[in-house]
Length: 193
Image (cartoon, rainbow, N blue to C red; front, side, top):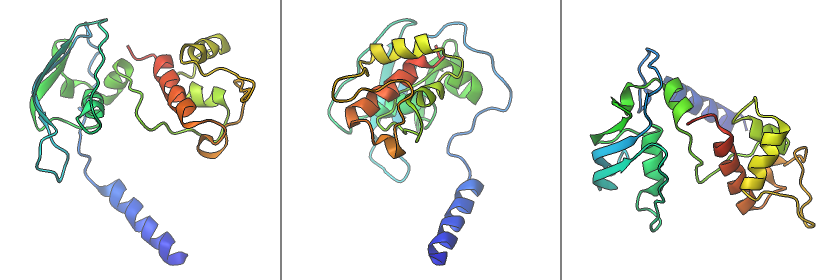
């Protein structure tokens, strides 16, 4: 076991000393005055892959518009979300939020503006309440109940969950679908615009 521990320690050191793939500006940029999003000729491929996943993407989403992006597995739906949140930067092209390129926003400003429910939701070994409050520590029980109702994560005879239900390690008290709903509930609770 000591060998595994040392190897894990070396890997952690490598990760903490590596250069991030995405760098945010140090200066605090203000939140955008408008929230329309525009992808201009965006191309993207994952590091280490030559085949582009997105090629010359043009997409405009006006403020307050809602869109549905659907397609087969692996066509880039999640990648669009990761590009919007700057988990990745495009290989070429540009993404604008309001009147500014996305890469000019500080990480804090961007997180206050855009929130995404990812395919994999991490569930902490705690209560539903505490798992939701991660998204918005100021939310009250009424807001928590409303968001759970909105995503249809409500008590049933088979699973009488409450805000105080302890979820266990990796959310073992919830089904896979319920875990996804918890992730969507977090996104809805987020103060991001």
